[in-house]
Each structure stands twice: as C-alpha cells, then as structure tokens.
Image 1 (spheres, rainbow, N blue to C red):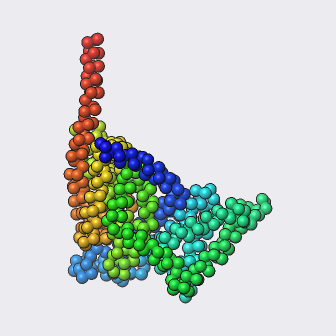
Image 2 (cartoon, rainbow, N blue to C red):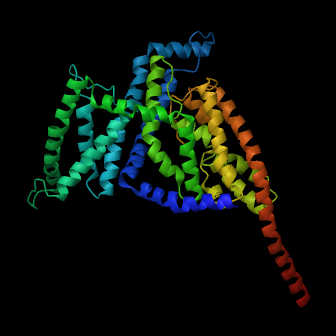
Image 3 (cartoon, helix red, strand yellow):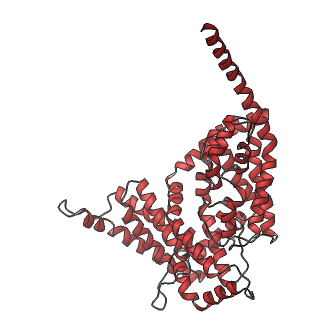
Length: 442
C-alpha cells in the first residue's frame, strides 16, 4: 500500500493540477475542438480510400476482386475526387476549426477569425502555381503549419482589437460590414509579415514554410513512433483517469497533431505504393491499446457480466454495449475504477502490455500499419481492420489481446469481487435481522 499511496500522492500533488491547467488552456482546447471539426471529413475520406484500393492482391483471380480492382483502376481519378476534397484537405478543416474554437474562447467573432487563419495558411502553404492552387500540403503534412497559422491569426486579431488598432465604423453601419472593416488591418499585417517571410524561406532554403516546419517537427514525429513514447503517453492518460480526470480528452488533444500528421504520411505512402512509415496513429491508440476504452476495460466488463456480485454484474451488463463501442465511462465511474487500489495495477499495466504486443506485431510486419481513420466509437475488431485497409490480421490481434486482457484482469477482479461481496454481506444480514424483528413484533 505504500507504493500505491506514493503514486496516488504524486498524481494528486503534481500531475492532476498540471493536467487541469493544460486541459483548460485555450490553445490546447482549441486544438482538441479543431481536430473534432476535421474528423468527419477524415473518416469519409478514409472510407473512400479503402474503396478505391480494395483489399485484394493485384494478381487475384477471384472474379469479385478482379472486377473491383479493374473498376477502381478504370475510374481512379473520379473515385479519388471525394478523398481529395475531404481527407486530402484535412489541414484546411483543422485550421478553420482551431481558429474558430480559439476565437470563441476569447469571445471574439469565430467566422472572421477562421477566415483570417485560412488566408494565413493558404498564403504560406499554397502559393498559386501555373494558375492553380497546389494541394501538396493541405493533407496531413500541413497540420502543424495549419495549427500555427490559426494561433497566429487569432492572437494577432486579438492583440489589435485589445489595443484599438482597428478601423471603427459609425454605429449606424450594420455589424457585418463593421466587422469586415475591423479585420482589414489584421489582413494587411498578415500580408506584410508572413508573405515576406515565406518568400525569404523559399529563396534561402528552397522550400515552403510547411516543409520547413515539418522538418523541424520530424524528430517529434519520429519519437512518437517509439515504444517508450507510446507507453509514456498512455501512462499519463491512465494516471489522470485514476485521479478522476478525463485523461483521454487531455492526452489525445495533445497527440492529435501527431496522429493527423502520421496518418497523412501513411495515406500518401499507401497511395504511392511505398512502405507505410508510421506506427503511432489514432487507430493504433484506440483499437490495440485501449480495447473498450481507457484502461482496456472491455475485458473487465466481460468478467463483470459473470460476477457473483449482483452489483458488479449489473454494472457489467449495463457497460457491455457501450464498452463494445469503446465507451467506458459507465464502468470507470460505476465500479468505480477511479481511486480503486485493487484494480489500479491492471488498469495501468494492461494497456502497456497491449501496446507492447501490438507495437512489435506491427513493427515486425505481422499486422499492417493504419492508412485510414475510423470513428473512435467503432468496435475494435472492425476499426482495426478498417484502419489497415480491411486486412484480417488486425482482427486476430484484437481478439488475442482481448483474451489476454481477460486473464490479466482476472486475479485482480476476483480480489475486488471478494471485497464487494464482503461489503454486501453485513447489509444483507442487517436486512434479515430487520425482517425477523418485524416478524416477532407482528
């Protein structure tokens, strides 16, 4: 118990207060909400991508597979158009979403701020070439640039409003027209600052700002694909959950730029027929590490469904359907797992074991890396297969991990079940005594 008390004390004194501050920080919340704005477009684009690249060997002789492959090859450009206009433009949606969310946090006009941020991004990432707007950096490789442009545009707009550096119109002027003049000076400042900077970087380094930023963030992206980095992120998530703080909301909010950059690179490599470079994606996090939600609690829910305790059985059955769809708040707060010393070890360690096994399975080529993003509420068996292009190996890995998780949770669950039954026995005895007294009195 000393180790448990030490960990709990450390979390309560140091990690929890810092996590709350980070989670409430406007820029972190803006990133989280901005990526949520982009998610529907990314999911639809992922579905289109898997349709265009069917899960059949190019030399297959299966009639259905052969027909699908031939149809896809014949109409490739037309079929890829929805992908190019959704997942292929993910940074555009991210930029708009992040800027809008940050502006709302500052109680500013969201639409105007989003438009200003989009102009910033297009100015530095998509200079017109041969009469067209290049889209090379509008996918996953431009995410970091899009976020930085959103922050710059909103903070600039806020600074100028705060110091009254603006064009004020008479009160009789309609608000929409007044706002358009209000943002006129920030637009000019963006052109005066970012455009010369973009030209300078092109001349000096022969690359656009998104390429330079991606080079700067390459060590971070590379580090994210290492097992220690993955384990570090999930440990932080679990410790926050254990302290009663929504760890996934905070940690995934911070990881979202990496997730989108990694899946963007994977998608580009997949389309080009090149080796897939990145392991650590949203699909890896959701469908291999956290089976059933944070803590990999689907195994615990299965055990609860067959518990001798009526209380635990009720929680298990109530949590079974949500857990199948990766939602586990009912079991986390109903059991509860928060500040639960008996289940702390598996709650922390089972995801680590899942991550380790899945990392080596993917790294060694037994399971394909993710090239698509499914909704996080997709059941893990389906989501893992969807993410890797509808291959079957992820299904076997997910099923194997769930079975392993059941055995890992089992001894700790049995201890917790005994504690619950022991707590229930005195109350049952008291009820029986009360009934006997009532019978004697009668």
